[in-house]
Image (cartoon, rainbow, N blue to C red; front, side, top):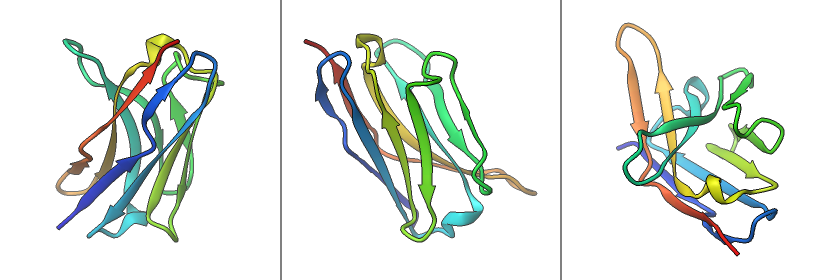
Amino acid sequence: QVQLVESGGGLVQPGGSLRLSCAASGMIFNIYFMGWYRQTTGEQRELVAAITTSGSTNYADSVKGRFTISRDNAKNTVYLQMNSLKPEDTAVYYCHAKRSGLVLITYWGQGTQVTVSS
């Protein structure tokens, strides 16, 4: 079955960096749009960054210039490089896969906690 497994979360000081990884299995990775979402307690899950099958990217305004999404189709992995982290970036980060067609197919990872605090 399809699995999305995130890693790389943790505790970091403000201004620091983290790189999240999401390893996919059980799917044809290169035909899926991939994205990173985040969610804090009591809030809706929000899109942080997304990357298309051709490598085009888009970002939430709050992370533009600080975060970079990329994918390695040979490794079935999508990354989120997070720089200049702020306390408000604290959240659970989720990997998301989407394939549009006659039927919309989506998958979620289990999430990884990112905490930005001094």
